[in-house]
Image (cartoon, helix red, strand yellow):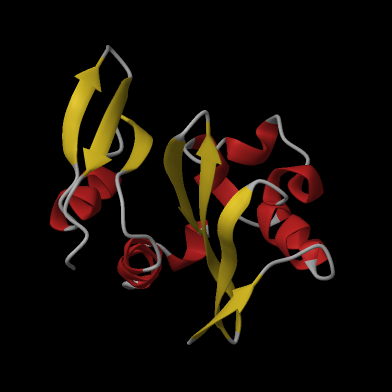
Length: 137
């Protein structure tokens, strides 16, 4: 496994990944209303996790002074530890508060985030907002 940093020169690999994530698109909607090339211009870090082929994605982006985490594992690769590898890479690459949103029905993701120290700070019927203060993992 290795991480491929995504930039404007290889954003086509990200675009291909997004088209092949299968049902993961139901919970990872970040690119449903964003152009990948424009989006990565504001990212602190953007990468694909490769294990032969691209199996996962991660990013940190800053919006209005808040750092947001985004993660996606391809449907066919869920449950193989790729999410944990992506989370570790992301949280170790930034030394401050990180926020994220997650569907309240996405129990696997919520469990993963809790392992990395995220806690619920706001909640409504369908989405949790979580914040991680401790970056010591």
